Length: 116
Length: 114
Image 1: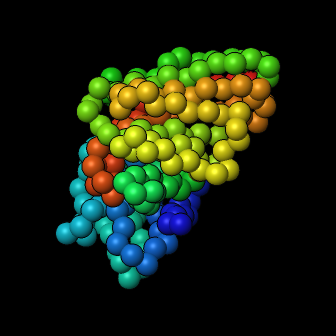
Image 2: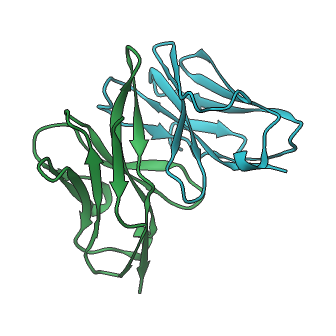
Image 3: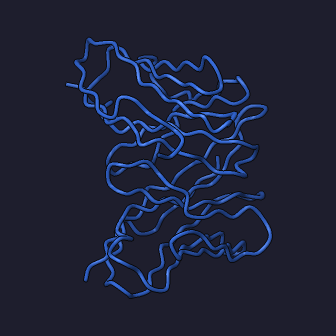
């Protein structure tokens, strides 16, 4: 089974500072990778995804991620964070099920706390 | 509104009760999913419905029973639950194969078993 590891459970950062949330995946085949954000009492919202092509992927809210096949990583970055970026962030990898289905396997999440 | 609606938002039930969670999507997606989100644990995939094929995680207890009457609706029937089943239950839908489009999630049902 394909899986992801989010190396940091919590990341505190000051407002307007840069941030990197780390994600490593385990797979020997082609993968599709995703980052999701979850605000309190809400479901998950897609930030960005890597399917193929350029290894630098840009998403919503100023986030971007870089796919690194040699290091099996897909780290999420933002050059300057805002208080409103405080949330839980999940990395996910796609896995096939059955003849026509697929599902996402998620990491444990990283809690980003932005303070003034 | 995310396009995936879950009801109820909150549910408190006793261990002997029977209840159902409902999920509805009008995005034209052809796959739907149930996930369980517990504190300090990764999201656990419970069930997948894709093109009317059900694929389930073998570790899901039989007290959880999914139903997908059509491509727009998904239910999770609950009976004789345990306190450790208290969690946020998330529904998601998707379109396309191999994860190419990602998911659209509902806001979840917060379940408390007493």
